[in-house]
Image (cartoon, rainbow, N blue to C red; front, side):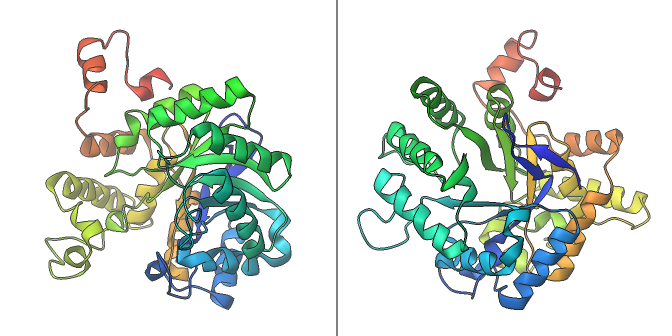
Length: 345
C-alpha cells in the first residue's frame, strides 16, 4: 500500500488508515457505532496490517475510553510497527477540567490515553475540536511540552476552521512551538466544503489532511437509497437523511455506471474511497468497518485507481456551489485565483 508523508513532516502514513470508533463494548459516547472487541478487534488489526495499513486512529471519547483500550490490546507487541493517533477535547468526566483544550485537561488526558493504549508514546496527538474558551497559546504550549516530554511525537487538529488552523500555525512559528502537521477533516463526494478553505490552507501551509467519513456514514456504499429502501435505514438515521437529495442521488448514479463499466469487479465504496484518495492535500483516508466483510471490501480500494475520465465525471456530478468569499474570488477574480486543484496541481 502507498505511504504518504503527513504535511511537511517525516511521519509516513498508509494512504488508507483504520478508524477505531467501532472498537467498543457498545457503551459510552459513540458506543453505538460498533461493538468490536477482543478477538474480533485483533483479527481486524491483522487484516489491516496484512494489507499494508500502518495507521490506526482513535480518540479518548470513543466508547468512554474503551476504543483506546481495545486498540492497545489488539496491537500488543506490534505497537512499534504502526502509527497510533488519538485525540482529546471531549468531556471525559464531570469535573471542571474534564473537557476542552486547557493545559490542565490536555496533560491529564494524554496520560490517561497512554495508560489505556498501553504504550509509552503517542505518534500523533490531535485536538479533537476547537476550544473558543482557552487561548490557543495555552493549548499549543501544553502540546509542545508533551512533545518535549517524549509522550507524543507529532500534533494535529481536527474540526478546525481554516482561520483557526492558520492562526495556530502562526502562533507556533512565532513562539517556536510544535506545530500541527495534520488536520483531520470530513470530506467525501457528497461533502466537499473542505475544498473552500481547509484543503487550500493545508496545501499552502504544509498540513496534511486525514479524512473521516469518506463514505458519508455509509451513504456512498449505495446500500441506502430512498427510491429503493424508503422505510429502511435512510429514513431512520438523521445522518443519512441529509444526503437524500437530487445531487447525492446523481452521484450514486455515476458510481453505478463506473461499477457497471468495470464488470462488477469493484464496489461503490471502493469508487468513493478512490476519489478521496486522489484529491490534492489528502494524506490518509480513514476506513471504518463493523464487520470483516466491510473491512475487506474497503481495503480492496487500495488495489486499483480511477481513470482521469472517471474522476472528472464524479467531480462534475458532485460539484457544489461556491460560497462567499471564495465565490467572489473566483467569479470576479478568476485570473488571479484559479480553483484549488488548478492552483496546486
